Image (cartoon, rainbow, N blue to C red; front, side, top):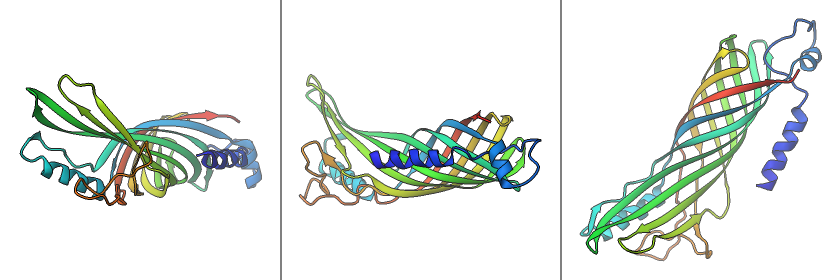
Length: 262
């Protein structure tokens, strides 16, 4: 992660003199004049949903349910999506011939929780799996400047670093809660691309943005605190290598706040 933030800092430093979307009346000619007279940065925050394929983890769940088919009152469901928050910064944005070019960084954390229940000692016992996906991204955007109130996003592309946390929690009657946490040993590199539309109720300072797209990523292995790895299922000692085998569609809606600096 230290390398990621170093790259981000250098990218911001290298682009700090670039300028965004509105031409100055004093700008008469040349890209140098545009870049020197215009500068805008900003921050954003929003909420979204991410689909994915968890071939390995869902196989583990299938075997878990099958081994307890006679005692479970509720089976554990599959994992195929997470929901949560996204924050970030629009480092810069430039308007060239009605095309908006920009660079941005983002961080998102999304969660999903499923549970299985069974009757135990006169009460209900519950097994919970709590999955969190975290993604740091560096990317660029390309959009068409339709009017001062609307941008049509052609592409929003990110290089991403992805990680996962899994909490395995057992809650039994009259017994302290048992909990263990797993993480993936190494961040996995992925890619995402999307499109959408941006509406400016207060141009250029405030805007609402909706995006849809596809994320390519995988999480191969999950590791316990003691260094051991999650196994394929309860009937084998082989280590799982396809915990999340593929990404999927995503959708987000966010609020952008611009910070003019020129």
